Amino acid sequence: MYRQNLFDEATYVAILERLNKLTPSSRPGWGKMAVGQMLAHCAEVQDVYNGKPLRAPVWMKLFRPMLRPMLLADKDFSRNAPTLDQFRMEDPEDFAAQRERLVNSLRTMHALGRRPMNHPMLGMLTSDDVGWIAWKHLDHHLRQFGV
Image (cartoon, rainbow, N blue to C red; front, side, top):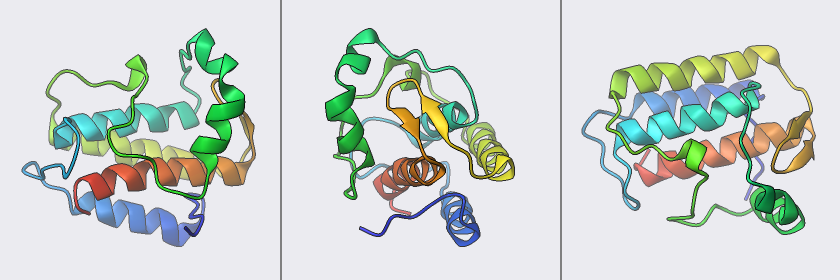
């Protein structure tokens, strides 16, 4: 798998184009989230890359040596993987509002530019790691909805 990076202009534009292909009637190929919930979930995750605090459970920090290589690996995330409570969206979400929220969060990340991050769950990430894992997460969910 080629390591895409959301800080690269072409990759950033391609993600925005894929987001624009989603519709309120888009259905997942796997998982339980509706499209609005998925957009809200992705926006919440994306906000962490922009500085929003992450409430990582203590046990996750203990498992960092196993989680970090798995999440940063050059392979797709597994389908139906568990998610942290902070990122679990239980309520129906408004499609248009959540897509706009996600696009705005992506614009913020792109405008802030390449920078390392001390991720609460994964530890220090280089700017390439941040751009890669942010793209990898979005790609996972966009593929989930067929775009």
